[in-house]
Length: 109
Image (cartoon, rainbow, N blue to C red):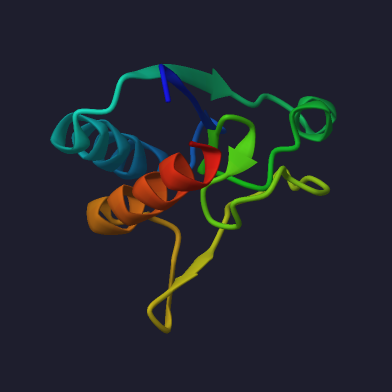
């Protein structure tokens, strides 16, 4: 796979956005992935719907949601909660991001 297109979506005021973005950047550096990272601030529910924004923060890899591996269905202009290893969190850990990026890179080949 050549350059991977990754989109980080968030809304201003989300406390989980900055830590998750830093974890994403660190994960990409550690994996040495060639990635084109776009950072988009979602400003209102209409923009959320047009982008398939599933809540803040969200990461899309080649248009697929990092968590589900599928294109987003629906939208939510709210904080996003993830279920990771039986725990609910709004911040995506670096190791989780790395594992999902590797999995999606293999899937998208």
